Length: 316
Image 1: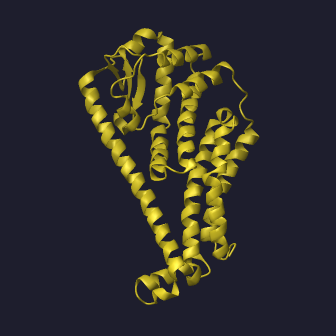
Image 2: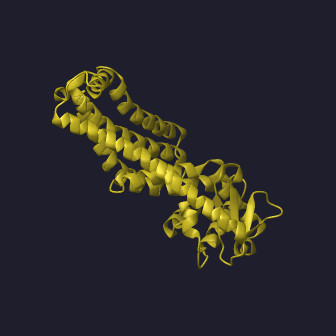
């Protein structure tokens, strides 16, 4: 387990800095948003697993040659059947750090979920006061606001798409349909769950380049994926016009921060510019073989730390 701990530590450092930096600068993710999304998730999961696994493997070195034997030895120490002196100060510190990091990540995930749900409830209460149902569109609410605003508010069977009067006045029926398709894709593909997970990752480890760059990349990728779904039903010029007009609003709703906290990404000027640029000067999609290779690499990346932890004697 000694060499496994060092390998996992090296993998954790690699996934924490050079890999996310290089991926965030790459141009191909916009040509293959789904594989890129899978890769970002794999980097985050494998990075976290490697950080915890490196400390865990190093901590149990005196107790056994594999994870099962080491954890069994640790249990004997915890239950008083063996002396803590068998562990040693550095190894005890590593195990404590692994436990604290695990608890911190799980607690931050839960805390982020709790905060998002609370913000969603508050925002839904606000909508009940300020909005009215769209008679011809199920699960759609209309707010009285002159700025062109469109977003979705997740909530399971209570999920809704919110439009403003200003947006409905500004857009043609086909452009409005494009906006609705885009927002409904966010709900159908449960993009809010991805935003929640990466928001929790960044909140837990804000100093880590992976967490910051991953959150930004995932926010952009979900917009691209929603655009691609809308393009199956509306023309490209219609979607481009709709995106530009929605972004032209002079102001956002006073509750815009609540929308963001409720788990839905609000476009930044940079994201809007990237979306329009991708539609106006499209690059060919990444080939099926390359997309499959990216997904395979993501799965392999996640399998490496898992195997080092679970396979007895591997890289000991």
